[in-house]
Length: 125
Image (cartoon, rainbow, N blue to C red; front, top):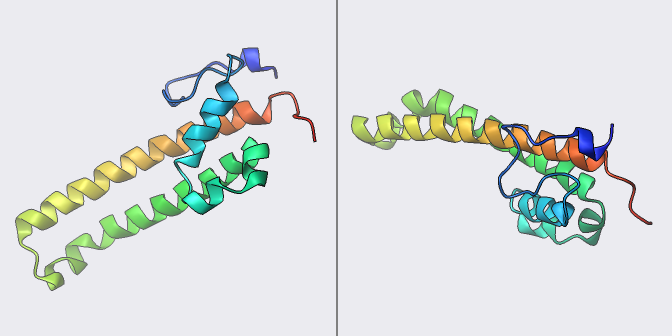
């Protein structure tokens, strides 16, 4: 599969240029760095091998999805014990649900960028 056959679809992040276009990999690295803790985005190996950075971003987003699911699933039982009013609990549940949808979209975007990075010509060692 060539880069020209990878077309950005609906899950392609708007912050990342289309695969094969000028400087697209740099835009992918910038976007991926925003998804991982700062200390990981600063490791030279991650920057030299963007597909490694993409892998770590995937792991990071999957963990955030697990946390959001847990927060959503336990909100009705845990939040009343914290003394929060029902209106705050309902708002919080909606917030967790929206965050979960956003994270799932980001996960699809990371997969699309990872696939494009994995199919680019190998960089020099």
